[in-house]
Length: 104
Image (cartoon, rainbow, N blue to C red; front, side, top):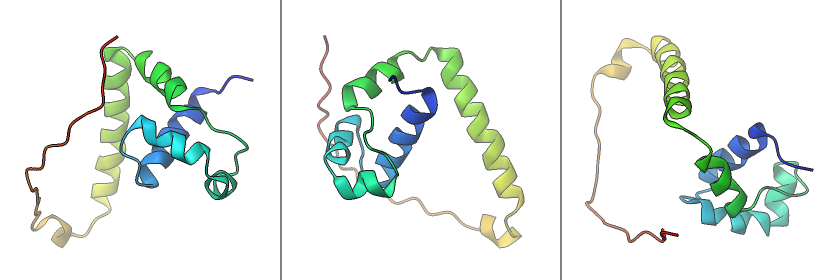
């Protein structure tokens, strides 16, 4: 039975919430029985399947997703108190990390 789009999006989002920072980390989640039980799944898509899903997106799809995030963000910001916007601090350490991407 193939996964639907919601399964892919949910899987990628939960991977991020579980401290995964790349699709390859999904493989760790696939082997973790406690994780699968917590998300109510017998199985989740593997990293290769998620990569195939992501490659189906064209520019218009990405823009549509970004616009959806921006609409939600604007609604959330409108609910904040004024002092929420007083100061923002962004900290960065300049660390560079090698990627494991490969060109086919």
